[in-house]
Image (tube, rainbow, N blue to C red; front, side, top):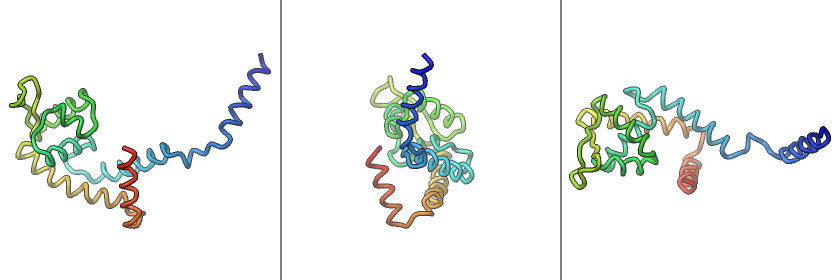
Length: 152
C-alpha cells in the first residue's frame, strides 16, 4: 500500500512538473481582475459595485427593459440580477414595474437620479479603464480588448 501511494505521488509530481501557475490564463485573468477591481473600487462614486455599475450602464445604453433581459445583457443569473435591481431600487436609482408588453415580467428603468449618477459613473469608469490598461500601448490595449471579446 505504501508503494502504491509512492507511485501516485511520483506520477502527480511528473504530471505537474511542467505546470507553471504564473503563465496560466485563469491565474493571469484573476490577477488582472484583482488589479482592475482595486482601481474601480477606490475611484467609483456612490459606492457602486462593479455589478451595480454594469446594470446601470446597460440600462443607460439600452433604455428600459425586462429584468430577465437585463440579466442576460450583463451575464447575470435571474436571482443575482433581481438582488442587484432591488438594491438599486432601494437607493432610488431604478424603478421596477410591470412590463407593458407582459405583465408577468418586471420592467426596469433608470430614475432621474439614477441617470444622473450613471452618467457621472461612466466618466469615472472611463478613467478606471484607462488606468487599468495604462501599462499597455494603444495597440496592445486594442488587441487585449479584441481577444477578451473573442473568448467571452
